Image (cartoon, rainbow, N blue to C red; front, side):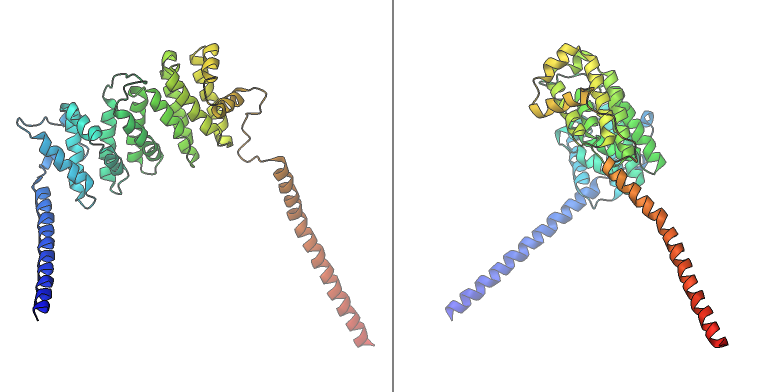
Length: 355
């Protein structure tokens, strides 16, 4: 009996403990939700497409630590109402304009920029457009040059992550999204003149859509023309650029070949041929051989026409076309032959009947 009583008491304790845990978790969730709801949104923060000059500074005594925590919670919660996300975008625009250090700490220090990029791809076009407005203002800000060897600015990771999204949106069907994305890319080329930006644009050519490839290539050419020869000649950057060009060239598709050759020649013309060749010899064998092949005038690097293919396939197509041309003729002959046979049979049967 005593053993049964002890067992029942244990079960009762475990059940009560579990219920207590569930109640605590529910309370925790409710408190989190209530705290989120405490993050009240002023009416002006709900507005769309606020002009930059109309953004107001923060009030004195603003607790930026609490503000950053609330914004982080909102960005990490997918189920949050979309108006909260719009408010976060407007808060970030204010931070960028009036509190640049806090902005950098929030977006880059906490590594929350992937969440911002996710808003650009939102099904709500309002969120997507306002997120692009924020990105455009980020690229409008002057960012000083940095040492490629030592000091990697935090904005570089953001640029790498966002370039494919911007190129995709710059060729999308919605005109207002397309306009904002192209404006972002223009400011990217104008103000974010880093060697890494050029590397990322070359890498962005590895996509399926021809219009996206063309856009990434044109942006890469513009940026390459804006960069100085001393900058492009730095060894770590030179290696990264040649590796990126070799990887795209090695895809062995007509659409890439001519474009990569132009980019390599642009970089080569920026520095002396002797310096270019000496740096080229320091590359790994695979990349070095590909770059030399691309620059070799004896190699047929001219891309074929859009509809052209190998000679074997061309002959196959010719034979197929001849067959298609001859097929209806054969059918006509067969048809006429069958008609003649039918006529002969009817004529012979008619003669028999007369007889």
